Length: 179
Image 1 (tube, helix red, strand yellow):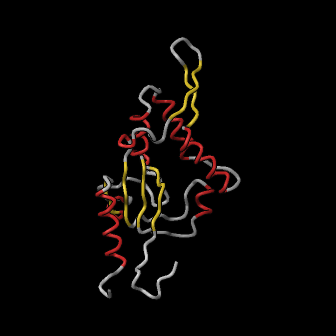
Image 2 (cartoon, rainbow, N blue to C red):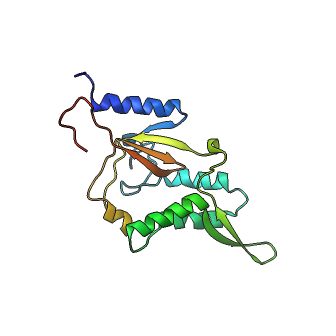
């Protein structure tokens, strides 16, 4: 059991996600400044281009301007408390993002932009990333408060570019491993 270490557990977990159909990414490869970068700074936690592509794919009948409005709302969810922000984001995730846009006849249409397809799960973009570094300084104050310096979770699960799961692994053979 002494040959078991956290890296082996992490690699095995990534393999399992891969077997479930997730794309597997490595945080250092997706980091800002790298050829495969998917974000401009370490303070960004949403993979914006993946989310934008999902909004386009899942909401093709809604005009581009309204989808971009939904994207802005998701990226700037902010309330006086982290609990309220989490609840607001959960509502958008579950129910969609409210948008309005002009119809051809001049009237205003109200609609919802879906962030996730709960009925056809294969329509979503499933990605798992290891060693995804995040640094404090996010322009969204509620996120910045939640972060205390740099963090690098072992595994982050993204659905359509949204980080929805976080796994911190520990070596079961290490008697000194802590939560």
